[in-house]
Structure formats: C-alpha cells, structure tokens
Length: 328
Image 1 (cartoon, rainbow, N blue to C red):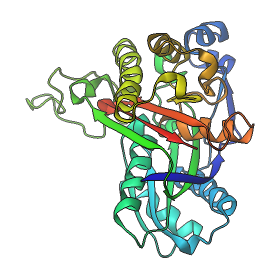
Image 2: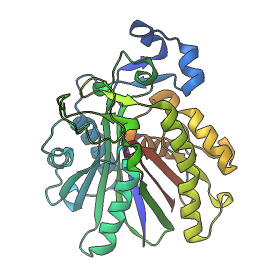
Image 3: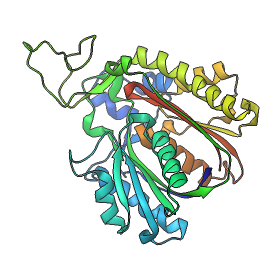
Image 4: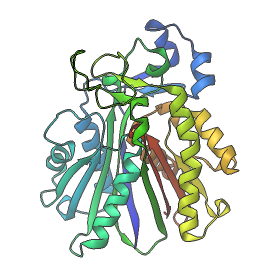
C-alpha cells in the first residue's frame, strides 16, 4: 500500500536574516557563507512559537485538502525545537486546528523527521481500516537553539513549518529508515548538565564538547562525510527493493543542509543537479521542515506534477537517515 499526499500547507516567519546580518555577531561575510553553504538568507521566528508555525501550516493543508478537521484521525508532528517538554506540539496543534477526533504525538528524528513521520503515517494507514486521514506536520524554530558565537554553525539554520494531509493509495511507495548512534555527538544540543566529577559523560563514549547548555553543536566535517555517504546509500537501498533506477526518478528532494553536501551526493549518484529540488538558498537548514518546504514549493511553482516519481532523502542528528521513493 502506498499513500497519496492530498495537499500541502507551509508557513515561514516574516523576519529574514541575510548573510550580511551575521557580520554583527561573528567574523564572516556574504561571500564566505554563500560559497561554503549555498545559503543567502533564512527566516527567523520572532514571537512565533513552534506550535504556532505548525498550526498555520496545518490549517492551510487542511483547507487545501477540502476535508473537515474532524475527519483527521492522527496527527504526527516532527520537531527538535518543541516549546514545551510536555505537552507535545502535536497535541497543541490538534486543538488549534480543531481535529477533535485525532490522536496526536511528536516524533524526533531530527532532520530526517519528516521521512520517519511520513513512513509512520503510511504504516498507521495500512493497519487501521478506520483511519482515513493523517496530518503530518514538520515545524522547527532552530534560531532559539543557535550559538551565535559559533560562526561555523549559526549561519546554517532557519525556521519554518510545513504540513501534509495523507490518505491511503495504491501509488508507488517504498522506504528505508536507519540510524547510526555512534555519531550522536557530532550534532547535538544538551538539555542535561552533568557535574564534572560524574564519570558518565552525557551518554557519548567519545566524551562531549563544552558547548553551552541548550545550544546546538555540530562537527561539520563528520556530518559532511556522513551525509554525502548516506544520501546515495538510502536511495540505492530503496531502488533495489522496487527495481527502479535513478533514471526513473523525476525529482530528488534531499534534506536542505548544505549545497556542497547535495552536490557531492549527486555526483556519487551520477545524477544531474537539475533533478534536485534546492531551496536552502532562501530558507537555510530548517531541520525536519526542510524536505516538505522544498516539496511544497516545487509543487506550487509547477516543477513537480501529479504522477511524478520522487526520491525524498533525509539525514540528521542521531545520526538518523532514510528515504522514501513515491509517486506524487
């Protein structure tokens, strides 16, 4: 069983931070950022909470799907930047959109979150005959966890949200989900402060950096090596399951982390960059929201059409990775 994405909705904050704006915080410039990342600007959530952005995206998706919020049976929200330890963002969004008959939970697979959530939605739909519609929401406010003293990472991230309404379908669908926890310390943000005399070092065998509590830390070199390997790996695993080749795919929609990662992975796959949807120039890295934001924009501007075969590939903290090949 496959799925049909009935509709998209997305929301990005009004506040824009350009590359030149970062010269106020760190030693950098537009050319340095642009050539190393492909990013020109990104959106920053000011007063907008994570739940608010997700709710706005969800309301648009529900309206475009032409269904009642009461018909939604499940809401899965992906985020690494929840406004609360509890309740979940999904429960808050459920109330704000009026999905009174829906179950709701959050899923944290970092930047691979949308892939994990979409595949989870398919599995729920496949096993529950009474479940008609699932709302998948990816909403992230990474600006609140950026260390603006770290010029290598603070320039990368932006905020935004995207949502899809999903139903059962007999369309082409195959997936691959995976994780390599040995690289967990390469991309992380601490929420627990352990005293130095305690011998357990935050759960990581290789120790931990002295980065500030609740601030994002990234080992750029290790993340680059990981991402450029797992993007083609995930696609090849999925393609072998269903007997397709890269030539059969109309569009690749990767996680929007860094244009160099996408370019290197494209070369390893032997696929032209013309077949990759890239939106990080104006959104930056929006974690789990990056793939659905790119997907939604490409549908909206007419690049992606019904019947197109797509490869969605994610990678991120965990280190998680995975992909979906599907018909839109």
